[in-house]
Structure formats: structure tokens, C-alpha cells
Amino acid sequence: MAIEPISQGIPLNVTDIGGEIGKNIIENLPSGITSGLSTLITIGKAIGIAILIYIIFLIIKAIVQINYSRRIKRIANNVEEINKKMDILISGKKIKEKK
Image (cartoon, rainbow, N blue to C red; front, side, top):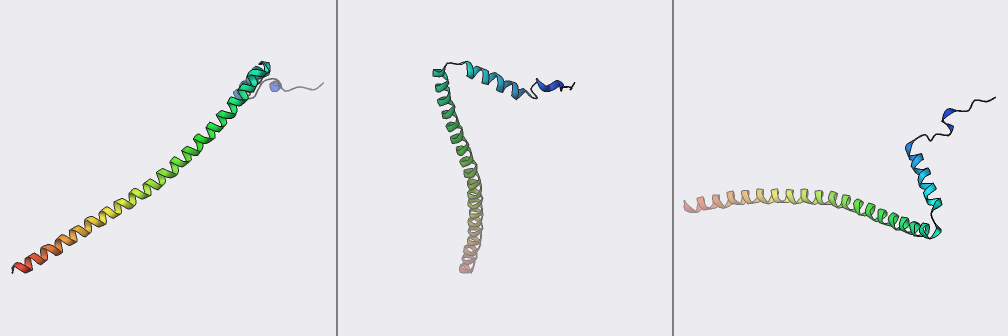
């Protein structure tokens, strides 16, 4: 006489229950509806893949944009520094010319 485990007929987690219910519903549907569902599922998968690719593209674009804006900021700072130095040089020449 062997002792059977208690959890033998009970699913271990909730996703198993949902899978069984979904499997039973699909098995009991007429074949015309299931062929349409398989097409919709295929289209849904394709849309999901397209959305994932677009999200990856947006992440890469954001990284490139951050690098680009940092570069523009450095260039702007360099231009400001050059302008200050030019102002000093120009003002120095005007003082010498007046003397």
C-alpha cells in the first residue's frame, strides 16, 4: 500500500489553473473560431515583436541623444570661453590704442 502525495491533483501555482481553463475553452470551441483565433494570436505576436523592436530603438535613440546633447553643451561652453578671451583681447587693444 503506497501513500500518494496530497498535492497530486492540485496545480502548484495559479498559472497552471489559467492554462487548464484556457486549454479547455479552446478545445471546446468550433474549428472556425479557433482558426480565426490562431490568426489573431499570430498577428498579436507580430505586433508584440514590432513594439519590442520599437522600444529598443527608442532606448538606443535616447542614449545617442544624451551623448549628442553633452557634446553640444561642451561646444557651447568652449564658444563662451573663446568669446570671453576675445573680449579681453579686443578690450586690451583698445586701451593700448588710446594711449
